[in-house]
Length: 167
Image (cartoon, rainbow, N blue to C red):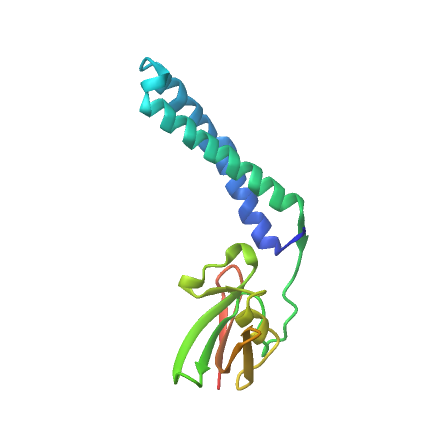
């Protein structure tokens, strides 16, 4: 399976890899050595915890390497007045009479509790390519959908720059 990532996603993953390999790994190796000296390894909680931390770091390194190796680079090709990647969108939910603000991101950046929705999620798919004032249908599953109006669009990029368009 290829992961769709932006150049910025890959750059951040490589930076994390460097941090984990060059800084964190030597610290964890040293911690394992230090705690090994505490005595009987079968009853040495500090050693066990240090080994677990080292193994979590190795696992994360392998994960990042696989993600980068299998990545397919994508770019945001949306027009200035269309919703694209990293754009902040204010939606008016007609059914509830409420507004919701989301930012459309790649799947590896998803954090729905903080308003970061995947481009592959029902909301992400519904708003991508649409403009301020458009009414979109968010198809949650076969039995449920809802309508939302795009109230504002703040064109963003992965580096944090933005421009605001409103309805």
